[in-house]
Image (cartoon, rainbow, N blue to C red; front, side, top):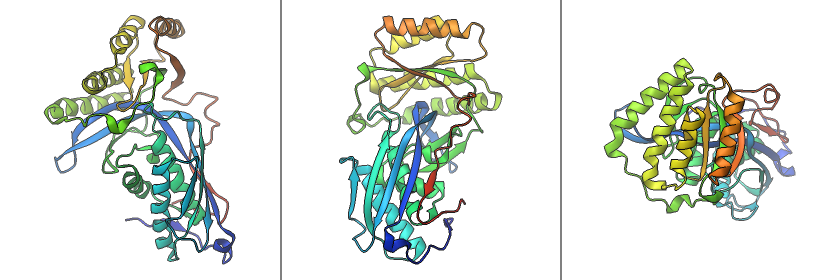
Length: 338
């Protein structure tokens, strides 16, 4: 395991109750999710998420010196996964600093709806781990954050690795494959199925994709080629096929209408959250008459009673290039980047 980069803290830092801040991004559901072969040719649950820029969670952690490490308070109350992550991160950071762990106060803020499949709990967890690490003057490697996130949640999205398209084993916290540097260019018209109601992920039946292994491996190869060739049409075919297979569990009543709107407006395909109600229609930004198609899509969604949420892209637009990355900062003490 690669150790985090350390910078010697000032002797009085812990006595003052060091504070750290962490941030983490969100996603917009999945492009692909199923069962795939890992490097040892063993079946493994995995997913590829659709990143969304500018939304996420922020965490602030303030140490309480000499308090028990399990004594972590969290606001808002009820963020039990983030609290569990804070305790795990405290122990991990204290071990790296060779100091006694202590509890603290965790405050979470953000703009993510809960239960729609946008990774709100994972975003909280990652921001929390980064905030705790920052309070100890550390930057933890992404794979370490992933392991803590899986222990805290049971399964985790790959948000700690940034926006690169990754096939990620969500129950094991490891990358199965780096597909490339970026998804093909797409304009995503976001919407909410199921009336925008939250989904209790734990109540969903556990999928058994064993019989679909060959189909998912085929979609994996297609997605790999779509990323390599920046092929938006192929991206849409993969995401639509994955969403259709997931319908066996989710059974969205609006799904036929959604795919019908995609076909009638010339979308490359649709994508959904495999554990939530968020969904999107994917359009190639290079398609002639794109804005006319987007307007037709919005009208069709309205007629179908499917609430439109936001429109975003898989690439940086000019106003997004100035948005700072969802990394983390430290107040006391300062931290170095690995």
